[in-house]
Image (cartoon, rainbow, N blue to C red; front, side, top):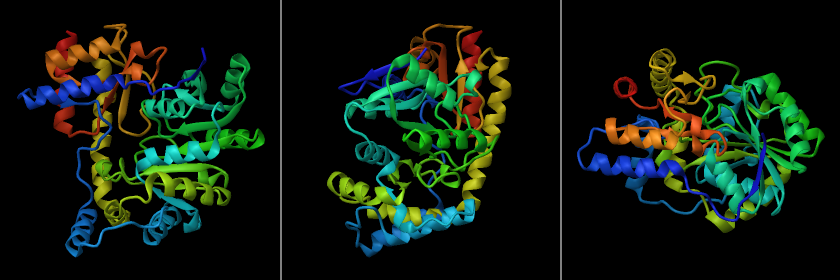
Length: 385
């Protein structure tokens, strides 16, 4: 089943109720463990912290160019050269105030009100909410076992035929939130080629790059020069609160994006840009953190099915387990509230990611410490008994 919507106002994040209650319970002394938020438990890299301290000591933090400092853009070009073997012109890189600003800039620059954009269902709820707030039509295309939990040319064709809309854009995340799916090179190329052949803008959300445990982590930039790639320092680099991300753009979009960015954001925060430039050199430290996520992943892949929670999609990457809870409930929101009130474990109900079938699922983040994840699962096991 496909769902097409056009929302004039942002829908609430149901998980925010869970998170707010978790905060209240923790403040009142309850031993809350959160598996609800996609936030690494590790700090920003030491070199990033040191660079920020030095900049603060100097005291000269101000505006930068609207699309970021030349130094950070050059460092990001080096990232693509070293990790992907790609020669990316730094002038094609736009530094943003987190990936959220990148989505705003992309949507505002690429689409007009009423245009239709496809996203996967289940998928990150902010896509749906930002698109709806901008007056765009949202075509939610099921990502199931039949499509290998990703979007395909065939599923996009079927969705357009059934809904009667023609797409102007496609947005795909790999690794995906909440499913963890990694779309391999062949499948990603098929999607990029389909979009190019049909004059559809292709936006590739790559914010979980660096956190792939299985499958081929491929950047759309390796396959086409027309993709709009959005990335962030929040996940692999453990810098959620620094609100710093970036885009890689086709040449023709650089100036339009710059003009919108100047009006909406003036510039990304300079302190965060300084820290991010340093963080790009912290791979050794960050891979230690990644190894801890891998151990959490292996633990959950084994332990969750043992307690009756089957894995609903492959845990290829990111740091999420998307689980089927129908053995115990058909209301994941009520179940999330019960988990929090009875065992002090917070998790995100599937409704956030899938408005049609999210009652059957929950997302559990394993970005926390190994001890916390193990303790949370044992509490859940006790509740399920």
